[in-house]
Image 1 (cartoon, one colour):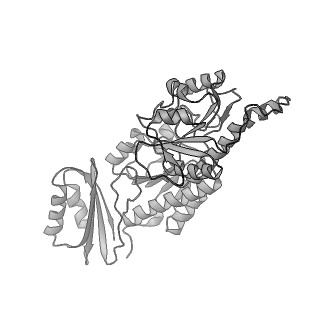
Image 2 (cartoon, one colour; image 1 turned 90 degrees about the vertical axis):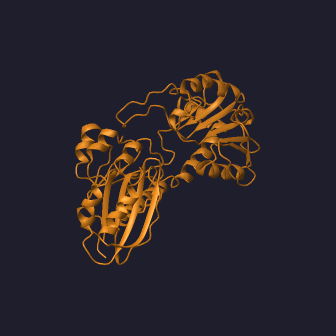
Image 3 (cartoon, helix red, strand yellow; image 1 turned 45 degrees about the vertical axis):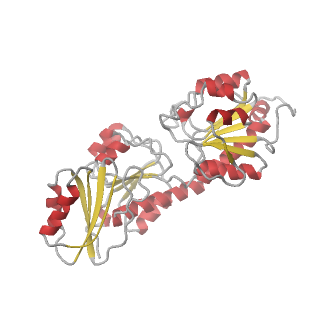
Length: 409
């Protein structure tokens, strides 16, 4: 049955050079009103551009603040074409009834491969030798250059990336241990360590793969670095605020750590026109990259497909599986029925009032799906038979706590 809106009128805004695969998925689903920008937008520029936009796609640079979300009165879904969602005020998006989708797994392999390549480079001290040659200095020596085979890798955060890295490292002959705040099933011969400090003490290389939370902020500081083996290496391809950069710089200068590979920083330039400033600059044993852990063509293509597909399923069907801030509802198709999707505050009595509206209209409810979190409820009701579904919209709007109602038919 036809949808209750013209797909060609659904305005879609894609920022930050999102992969063309996203456009392809959207167009194949019938959404052609797509505007794309190669860069991020900020402040008033972003607020002005969001006027009338129904779907917004961003990557990691665009900051979707409370003000931007409040001004975007037509916005109904946000796609973060990346892993992280720190750039979005998720609480405000939830309050506005806007689900936010991301791609938590699509660039897992890319990050793991970069980490394994950095482990080898740091252990062989190739970054320092490379810079010496650029200065005309021939440093042919085996001093401080080590094989990774037989060495110990400590992984902090045994999630999607951590597990992939453990498999690759084992194939290189490394002894792999991990620490995670949750119990995880180890792959291969990888073994868990009961305490974070013990992992630091036994590892030749420590690789961080944790989210940014209050518990992980500066989890590697001067105290933790002092626990690491003299000559050990540190890799951070997780979040910039996980490591105390000043403390790391001192450890690299003193030689306590042989090297570090850092892809994320506490403060990152908003564009290529802004200078990158860090105490790690100028240190030959610091292998730095500009937040490109997941930036491979393969990963970006996969991310474009995954996030765009989630957006299409939400717009066309109402499914919210994979949303980072919303109750998850996986919905079947609804042939022969129209679908009413209501987002409301999670307060007592809303569902009863909503069903009273249907009962009063003698509606034939073919199916109903409800999920809640601490803040909102998401109820989807399929109404069978003929009739004008718009008669419900005004009635549902009057229910205290109702945030937004969409109708598909």
